[in-house]
Length: 67
Image (cartoon, rainbow, N blue to C red; front, side, top):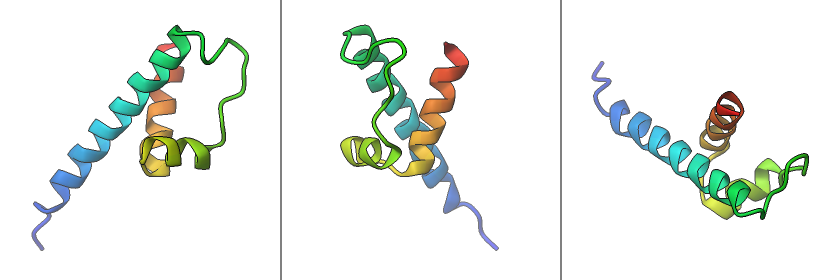
């Protein structure tokens, strides 16, 4: 079985999550999202950024890990 076709999907997923992470960071730094404020729902964020829940969750994991 050729798994080579899976590589672009994985790479794209990583790039999407990094893009979402950067966008969230920008919203935090600009004051649009304040400390202690709840984030919009996963569904709303996925719709806003045009990404899957998997990409969004990875971005959120990275934001939490980085503080």
